[in-house]
Image 1: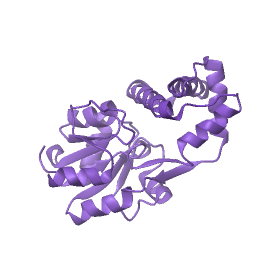
Image 2: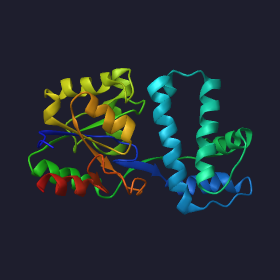
Image 3: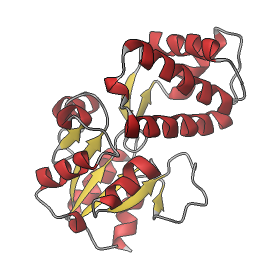
Image 4: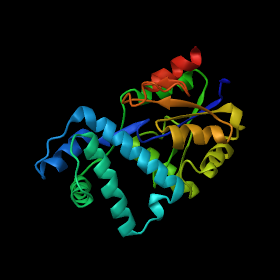
Length: 235
């Protein structure tokens, strides 16, 4: 892997997660239907559900769906989450649990290693930016999450009108960064939407595996936090 000049980070699952944590949100929703979740399996359920989301965004992006289509999609998404957590339920029940999830107040929070890890990379001479499928504008996302002073810029599907793995969002990020693909590194938690899609336009890629969902993955370098990216590049 060529040493990059700029590092693009995915956001959800890579730099940030739910606040309160997704485990608490799902527990509260499931409890309303008499379900107790296997929290060890919940991470696997989210992994399967997020892969389902990534595949959907590669064919018919969720943001372009009608309200009914979106409701049906997230019923299936929740069904996968619950299956991982030990409960096989029908789509109707899964849809009701998802409604309970959505009815709770929650936001986003950066993982504890993110700010010091990004600052370390910048101190080491790397440029850092965020590249996300979130529907917000990049400036809004940074303000919401406290990233404004810690990344050079952020680009989102809300800015570009295309979601990863669409090559347009990666090309827009390269253009915004003013670099050629071989000078850029993509760090993300989705093998298909982040890593292979970035490689398809000529970028290098590193897997962020915070929940150890890919213990045997050897297609890309694998790290558990932002510090790991710094260590990898130093090595």
